[in-house]
Image 1 (cartoon, rainbow, N blue to C red):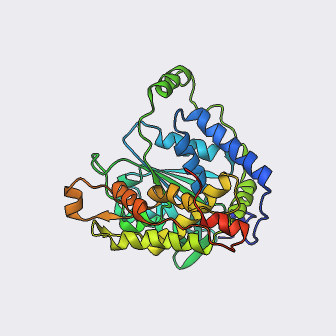
Image 2: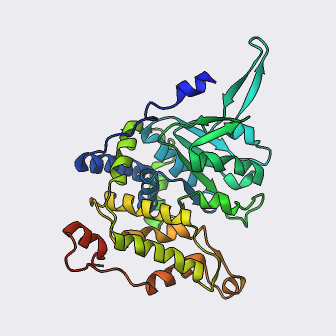
Image 3: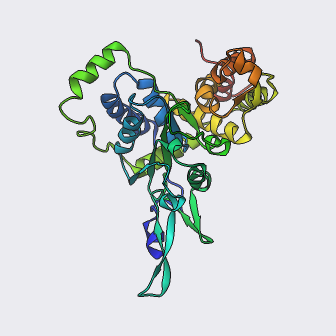
Length: 349
């Protein structure tokens, strides 16, 4: 057990210093450039993945097989000099394979904890919805509390900690739907989609001889990522933007088109994602449009359509777009400080 405690990152136990804006921008660009070199034509997906990482969230990549979900997860992980574990979720995977297990040592006559695959900075959960609900639930505690409890003993996970999971649509053979509690712990969901013609031709020209991951090496350290997340935490949020964020969530709960609206947890994650978006745009304050930009990715997988709405052709994305189009965007008020005024107003479209 002592070995597990010793393996916990030195970043645990104290808050890292924030990174200066120039270094933050340079580090973010190094990550994005590396990912975009491997994943052709998916710069938006790469940026959102980085946004989730810097917002200290977890990412769900959902799409049909063969569009690059696992490749994106692996590439993002390889850009960081940190510990990475991959879990291939299968129907026979056990919860103890994920979290760890206590094993009796006959020599010492003591039970020793052997950590599972979640003891890493970045955990890649490949095809997460091919495992049973019981095994999927093994991730609940570690995703929310960054710790694992086995036989009554809790073990802290390394920081930074991020789960990047991939899944196929539930219509695919051999898949199990993620429980609502599991989906709610993912900050954002990305659907990769097919690449455009030019990107697909580029892929054929560059990815045949060697694996696209062969030349990927770390461009930042785990300490760099911790400093970048500290920078994101310092991004200013005005009262008007907080009220707007809450208004978006309440509108989903009051919508007659939805059977389940956005949870209070999702409001926290929506604002954290908006702060990371602002930081990546070079600002130290959040605009309402930062909230709007990430709202679909953060909320669409959490809400559940009413049966009539689903039958009428509505989708979670269409409902969210309707809500965002109807909600008034807060405007700057006279007398506000410059930064607060900017954060209350919406940038020009």
